[in-house]
Image (cartoon, rainbow, N blue to C red; front, side, top):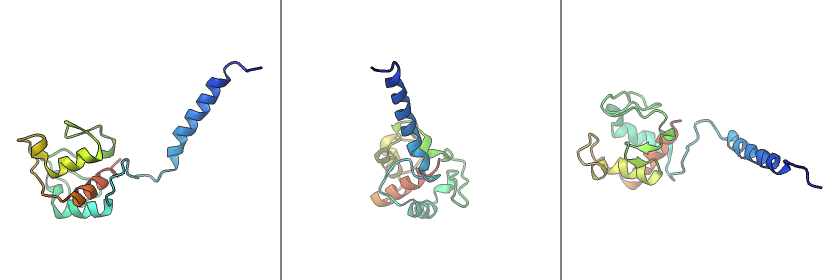
Length: 127
């Protein structure tokens, strides 16, 4: 004989297990997998002076007020308010923001594909 409501209880237990599965992740772990190196991304951010325009947590002297602050970047749903926040879109924006939104304040960076992947990996650690 089947117990009424057992299906819902099993579903609730399964859903709870799925939610708890992410609890073992290291704090600050990248939200997205970019294939990039977040430590190298921080180096690129410093070398390219991104902090002259942006506040970037974890990057010394990154306290610019021209562009938006990049805190909690991994939690954002959009890149620059125009692209869904996915690694390919972020990398595209980092390299050629003028191609995405002509006339915006962010200049084309000249980053290589690897550099853009690394910077994206760093930004996705910002939770």
